[in-house]
Length: 436
Figure (cartoon, rainbow, N blue to C red):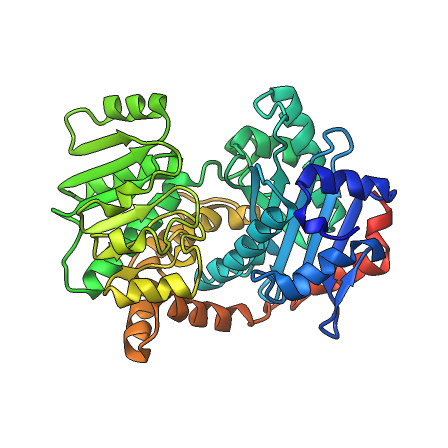
């Protein structure tokens, strides 16, 4: 079939089943050539090799269809030099397989860079479950089935991808994943996990804001005005961090009326305004302020929004904020604005849960050092190093952060070496795609 990538995820899943298959892969061989599990998926290979702007040497793309749910699962492995790939599991609707693949490929590469800049001995990966339009996605029984099936899928990958929490996936879902695989983090504390990473994520983004302000000679956060798009778990925790630092005002946008009412009650009498907006409304980015924080979904920094921004600094928790990584970073630089790349500033979600297997200590220095100003890989210092490199080289902050991250990402794990690639080769040799 031609134009497989133009199918909906459900239609592609049905096509895979029509081939008598429940699993498929596209992996990069030792010779640099893409290997496909099925000749009938040639269009998928052509897309990855030539038409996708988001495929950048990814070591493996693994797909499967849930036995009961019939949902399409994806595990995207970008680079495992520093360690096995790790990244969150996104449960989200996608109109086409192209959109599904683009999100997974971009997010996996972002995790490679995020883990490297954070000094973690992990590679970059991402998990995705395609949410079908007619799926009863709020039904607890359906979610139990769905996430247990995804856990079994992760187990089948033999450790080359370790999953975690992300958009559309909650703590209860991670507990279900944990029933079917050991290759998972961000599980509930009652099961020995680190729990909700949102507070740590918010703290890290605020540290990056402080690093940018200090680099620009703008002082600290006291007295500053912050505009933020999105007040979910990370956004609300960020408001708390900002208020603790004495900001003059927080202006936030929210698409849920119930959430808006909840936050207005929580912050009554505080300098916090929560505005109700429609989905896709980006007008908050044009608010006069010192720092604007995109905290919702990605792609909001574009030719449409960048000319409207009235903040000096752009620093938020959302992943993949630039609609086009090169074009939009250049547009921000041309306006004299300072953009803190998301994979630099929102690292703490993965940092807080990545190494759960090593246990916990009170006021853990393995976590707290990221928030300080002494450790060379702290959020504050990496932010300043990135801005200094961008200024010295006359390049965008995104290009500077990518250069720093990609250099680190090629360092091999000091004990296990390039183990993830060995696992992927083993999956191919043992015909993983025929075992589902």
